[in-house]
Structures are given as structure tokens and as C-alpha cells.
Image 1 (tube, rainbow, N blue to C red):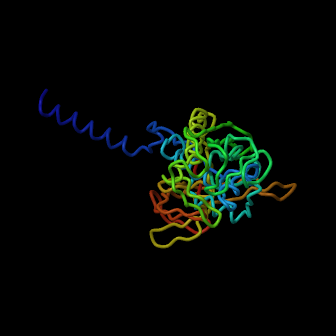
Image 2: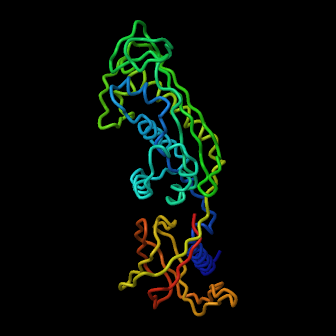
Length: 334
């Protein structure tokens, strides 16, 4: 091959490489993103009297189990998990109460505001010991009644049972159910004994991720139950579809080279997203009702999101100029 021919082929190769690099990743066949879910604190109403007797106070074991579950799901990597602070913020804004933890309708509403594909709700069905007899102290009934470090006449193993449901945020439909059960391999005269020295609770919350807790027999049973639940959820991950979201908003401000939009993460905008900027030239109204039925627009350019918070996004121009306050922006995103 002649040097001239080689140079020609090299120039062709570089031109093709440059053209491919300019194509958005989605158009190059990039793999779709992982399903995005949020995990609500588990409802523990049915075991509250048992856990209160065990710890000596009303510890939120539902939050402890949810935190442990999030850690396991993040390590697994099948799902993308929404940050806790984003979930807490929406829950506060919506006056979400503990009584709503296991309600699919309320959970779906939260999930939609968070922009997730599904939301996980669950309940703790068992949290105690296998000895179904009236012991010393406790809440009465047919439970062994261990207080913190309390003793019973015989050794017992710890049992934990949890159920979970993945909820479609658009319809409230139950997409999948999962179950996790765990029993400690050891026995002890105390649920918080068995080799651990755990004091990781206070102000109603508990750190179930600590090694001290997991060295107790109730901690061992909890970890086994959560691991089983994660395995069940991962096996059903294909039932959670990645939502395609149409984002529409307006240019709220133009400041030098920055274009600020009135939509952000809550609407589905992510850093790196490109949005088309459109200018309305004419509005078509229904002659009978006066309602706007169509807006005729002209494409002005494209902007890329560089900084995003819940309700706004800062963008830089990719193509076009003369962006103005009130211009429409639109994109389809996952």
C-alpha cells in the first residue's frame, strides 16, 4: 500500500471516529440505566411491643432494617437506590407519617415525586425468639419477653421475618413481592446477647449495620432475613421497567453563558442531559372553550444540564444563541 493510500485511509478512519464520538451515547447503543428505586422504612407495628421489651424503649426497627437493606442493595448493584436525604425531604414536604409506610397508594405518590421507577415498602412480621412461652418480664401474651440483656429460663434462638413489595409509582400496582426469614445459628438467654455487646440505639433509632449488632443473635437473624429478601428482590428485578420521562419546562433566567431552567431532578433532569429549546410563535385555541390545544414552536437551540437540584437546573449552550426567559425546553429522558 502506498504512503498516499495509507494517509487517505487514516484520514477516513479519523473522520469516522470523530462522527461516532459526536453521537449521543443513547444512539450508540449504550446499555439502559438500572431501575431506580426508593426504600421506605418498614412498618413494625405488629412487632413493636416485642422490640420495645427487648430494647427497653420504642426503637424504630423498621428504619434499622430499611437501612440495612439499602446497604445490601447498593452492594449488589442491580438497582440504583435513591439517596436517603432526598427521600426524607419529600416525606417531610408531603407530611408522610409512619402509618403510611406500608400503603402502596401513598408510597406511589412519593415515588413519582422522586422520579423513581418503583418504590419498596415492607413490614416486619417477626422479631423475637422461638420460645413461645410466657417468660420473665416482657409484653405478655405468648412471647418469651426478653428485656435488654434480660434472662429466660432457657436458651432461645432469634427469629426475624420480613415481607416487601415493589410498587409501580404510576399505577400503584404491586410489581413483585419478596420475603426474607432468618434464624440465628446460636442460642442465648438474651436476644441482644450471644457474643455481641451492642448499644447502638438511641432517640428511637438503631444502627443495624454495626458489627456489634450483627454479633448478637437478633442481629444475626436480622442480617440473614435481609440477605434472603435482597436475593428475592434481585431475582424479580426484571419486573421493574425503566420509566421514560418527558421533561418539559421553561427558561427562568439567562445569565451570561448560563441558562437556568424551572425544572430539575424532581422532574427527571440529570446532569449531562441535553434539552431542546423552543420558542412559541403562535398558540392555537379551541374555538369552543378557548383552551390552548397546540403551540406552534421554532427550535432555538440545545442546552446541556451542568448543575441540577430538586426544582431547577443550570445549563450551558450546546447549539444556538439568543435564549430568552419564557422559552420552552423539552427532552425525553430515562
